[in-house]
Image (cartoon, rainbow, N blue to C red):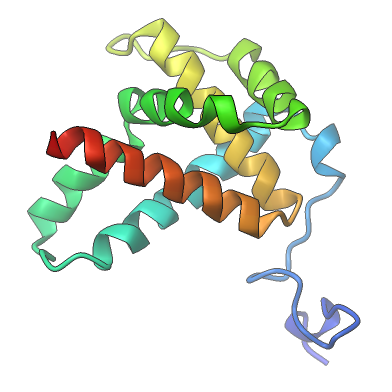
Length: 151
């Protein structure tokens, strides 16, 4: 039996895309670590969204992705979805916003903190296996940002 086969749930399906379960419950993972995985998960979501659109030129994809994955873009998405968050999600966002981390010199401090909070939320939802909620919030944020950009 391979490493991949040892991580099957009761239905015989893999719990994770990759066979690496978190070392502890998501509630016990530091906010910066949640943001670390959340950044990657969100990046994949944005790339998949962009590949669903007709214009697939590499420069265009990169330019559009930057609108979503920059500190400014992530901060904006958080502001668009924040009113829809439940108490636990708001707590995760607060912890992410208050987490100690170094802010790049070229970044706006408030935007960077909000972006980290958004990434923390994405990481928490991903590691908690709340895929439907994760998809709902990311889709809502992307859709609302697209509507703003089209106006």
